[in-house]
Image (cartoon, rainbow, N blue to C red; front, side, top):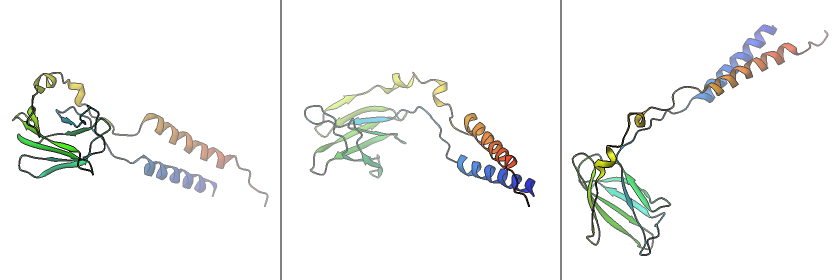
Length: 167
């Protein structure tokens, strides 16, 4: 009977560890993203603006908010003119037209006032390394496995050390 209890406790520990260990897997990579920064007239970042990114076909590609530095970041999936809009509830913000080349790198951009900006992402792209695309995650860490194993042995030792009451 005692062996059945030990086996049952071990089964519970193994089942619980499997339930706790599940999760998603992530993969890291370096890709040429487009960053548009929205600032006020004094150059201060406009954080928390409602933002939208429209692809060359006019369809919405992304919706969200500018980050704490006033940035909207997106990964274009085709060449053409992209439109990035960011607006506050009281109407402050702006529109930036972004020209993306066939290699999906930024060619140029212009704000709503027609101020053009030239960009050379090819030089930044040349700096990528093979290790920048390494996969991460996948599997249980050594510390977690050791913790579950020691926990299982602790439960077994506790059960075996209990004194049985006299019958």
